[in-house]
Image 1 (tube, rainbow, N blue to C red):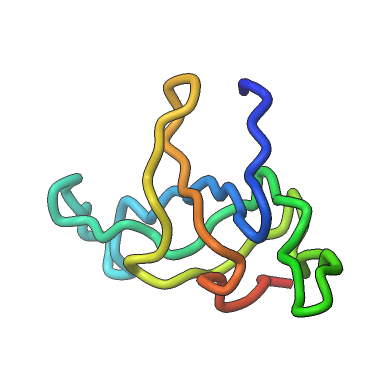
Image 2: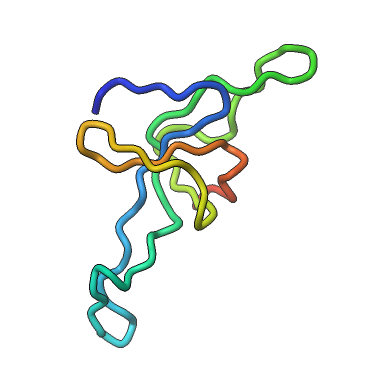
Length: 96
């Protein structure tokens, strides 16, 4: 991947693949699948500035598996790979 570093409190996330089948074994066609709301953090910015002008580092780091809102982030294509750029506040939590 091209060296891409998000700014401030933004995070670059790669969506994880969704399931191809239901629990009952029914294959889901591509057009009926919902986009997954789970992903892997690829890169993070340095952090946001607080009222005193100090940089507050982000809680997430590259490699974390995270859950985010259905409509969170902006979809971008970098080196042919579809990624999301979102603010850290759009991330609901880290999957342990």
